[in-house]
Each structure stands twice: as C-alpha cells, then as structure tokens.
Length: 350
Image (cartoon, rainbow, N blue to C red):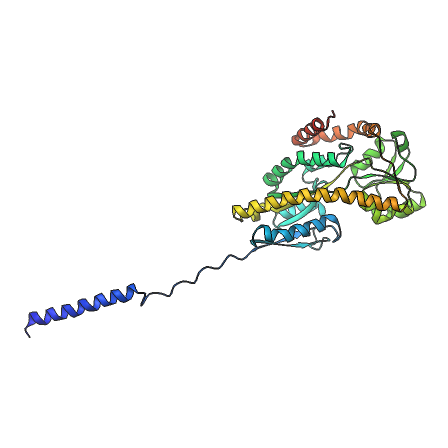
C-alpha cells in the first residue's frame, strides 16, 4: 500500500473515531453527573415575645396568631411564642428590642413604650373615649399613623393592634356624678390616672398592685381605677361594692416584626402576613369586648353592682379633664392633633 493510501485510511479511521466520540458525548457519556434538584428553602423561624402571663388574653392571642402563620404563609414562616417575659425583656424597652433585632417579633403595650414614642399615648388620653366602640374608632384612626412611625422611625412592620378592656372606677360608695368622685382616695396606675383624680377632686394613690387589696381592707384607699379582668383577679367583691364603667382610658397592644426580617420574605408571604394580622386584629377586638362583659358579669354575680354612667356624667368627666389632654398636646407629635380632631369629628364632639 503506497503512502497516499495509508494516509487516506488513517484519516478515515480518525474521522470515524471523532464521530463516535461526538455521538457518545451527545448521549451523555463522559459528561458530569446531573446536579440534584434544589430542595425547597427551609422555613423562616421567628421567636415572638410577650411579657404577659400565659392566660392573659394578649398572650393567648399571640399564640393563636403564631399557629395560623404557618398555614397562612404555606409553611414559609414558623413562629414560636415565649410568654411571661421569659426572654428577659421589659415592657418599656420593647420598641428598641425589636428595632435592634434582639427578638424578631413582640407584643407591646402602646402606652408602655410611649416613653420612646410619645405618639402612642394618644389612645390612652383620659376620657377621650366614652365607650368600647369609640375606643375602636380611635384605634382605627390612629392605626395608619402608628404604622408609619413604627416603620419609618423604628424599623418595624405593624402586624396587628389588640385592645384591653377600658378602666372604670371600682368603689365602696356609689358613683353617679362628678360630685360623687370628690374626696375619693383612689389607687391609680399611671400619671394620667393621678391627674384625673386630682381634676375631679380626689386623691391619687400610686400603689403597687400587690398592696391594693390590703389598702382597701384597711381603708387607706376606697376606690381603684382599673379594668374588669383585674377586678376579678383581685376579687374586689370582697372589699368593694360598686363599679362605674366610665372608660377612664383604654389601652392597646401592638404586635410588630423587625422590618429587615419582614423584607426578607417574598411579596406573597408578606401579603399573607399582613392579611392575617388584619384578620387577627378584628378577632381580638370582638373577643375583648366579650371578655369585658364576661368579667363584669363575674363581678356582678359575686356582689359588685354596676352603676352605668349617664351621658351627662361622661360629658362632665370629659370637660373636667380637658386640660390634661390639652397640656399633653402642647408637646405631643403633630400627628396626635390630627388623630384627635378626626376622632372628635367622627363621634360628634368638639
């Protein structure tokens, strides 16, 4: 075989081997193994904080909210609730705690953190509201302002607002008018309560709650400003006779999540949490309205007489404490006046 033929044959063999190699490669031979399919991302796990005892309605509500989060977010977010202050954080510091990411989610008393955010005091101004329903109206008007300040100033997303029953006057004597409040020696729990008692001609006693029962029994005080659940817990029927549901003030809690943590979620999951929060808020307002009635009924059954205030009495209380609200507004954030003006217009008061 001459040189040309040999080279032609060699070229043919090499060409055939190349074609074969290409065919094998095309069928996957010699390639890297296929990468395994990516598994679903693990759920985001948040710890939620509450300073309230396990049986308190705020703790119960937060636990229920946490249970619903998993379903609402299709398993993308899971929440575990620590109640009773188990994480060691105190109420007044909770805005900073969530802002700094020390805990991603927390329930907090709005007036309790008002030292850091004064706007929150607007919902607990004395005798601004005259009923539970008016408390809901005030909260709804304040909510968008709370949302804005919480997000822009404190780096948090507001999930829901939950009320407390309004505070009334529990006393040894029947209270039906402003004149009946003159001379009362009343246990108060905050600065506004003290100002109220001074405005009506009474004497405020800022006693620790642990001393209230003994102080009533010994006659050091003859009345208490508080809500129905507290009255039941303290068994006021053993030392008091009357309850005037005058709605001195009505506190609220807010539940927030650290904004950085919230923003890590996809848009659908964020929307699901926002919707769940609004649903929970509506449910908590209904439950607390019923809780208030149930606790009052327990007190009545045990001997406390409810003395429903007249519209005239409530108006008297509002007028005599007007200076307290006006003084607060002098140094309050500008949004506070907007909220109060809108509320008064809504309920038909000046």
